[in-house]
Image (cartoon, rainbow, N blue to C red; front, side, top):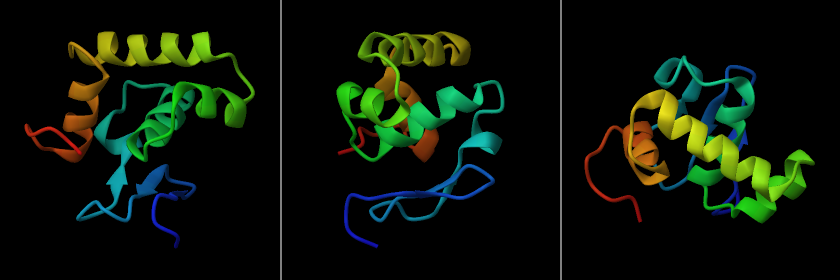
Length: 94
């Protein structure tokens, strides 16, 4: 696997080379929609809103809407807090 790339299996488990263990987004965030988990997976590996929009064939504004809705659904102040929760760490993710 090339550094910076990610892989999602059929269970929506994301493998991030820098992460200590795989993150199962479906299990960690059961209230998120499948599309929101796709967007989150790409954010966690460093993709920009524009890149995500191109990959998913949606507008960058729709990506922004998904980010905002994820934070709202999870009761977290922003997408960085969502990323921290995904990693199970209160520290800032590089």
